[in-house]
Length: 183
Image 1 (spheres, rainbow, N blue to C red):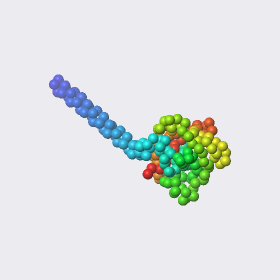
Image 2 (cartoon, one colour):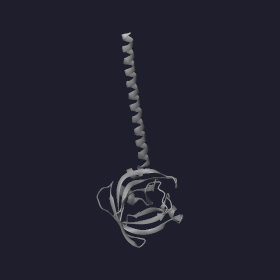
Image 3 (tube, rainbow, N blue to C red):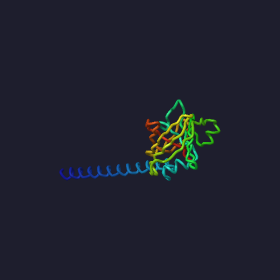
Image 4 (cartoon, one colour):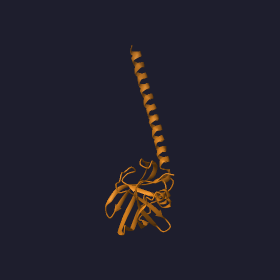
C-alpha cells in the first residue's frame, strides 16, 4: 500500500512538472510571436532613427490624441521639408495614405509654415523645436519623441506607424501620437 501511494505521489509530481514546463514553453512561443508581429508593424520606424524617419519621409505626419481620436476641428498634419528645415502644418478631416491623395481630395487647410531645429543630439528620442506663424499668429512648440507606436486608423482603414510624443505648445504640454501611413 505504501509503495503504491509513493508511486502515485511521484507520478503526480512528474506530471505536474511536465505541465509546468509545457506551459512555460507555450508562453515563451507566444511572447516571441507577439514581438515579431510588433516589429513588422513598426518596421518603418525601427529601421531608421526617429530623426531620419521624420524628416526624410515625403508623406504627412498626423498628430492627434490617439490613433483613433475623434476631433471635431480636424487633425494636424505635418509635412517636413528637410532641404530648408521647414515644416508645413495643415488641418485635415481624416488621414490619407499619401500627401498627393490629400491634395487631390482638396483637404489640406494650410495653417502655416514653421522652421524646425533639433534641440538635442538623440537620434531615437529627439526634441524638435518649431517656431513661426500659424494663421498669422506667432507661435512656438516643442515636440519630444518618446516611444514607437503602431496600429490601425479605423476611419481611414490605414495601418499607421510612428511615435508617442509630448507636444508643448506655448508652454502647455500634452501627450499625443504622431503617425504616418505604412507603405
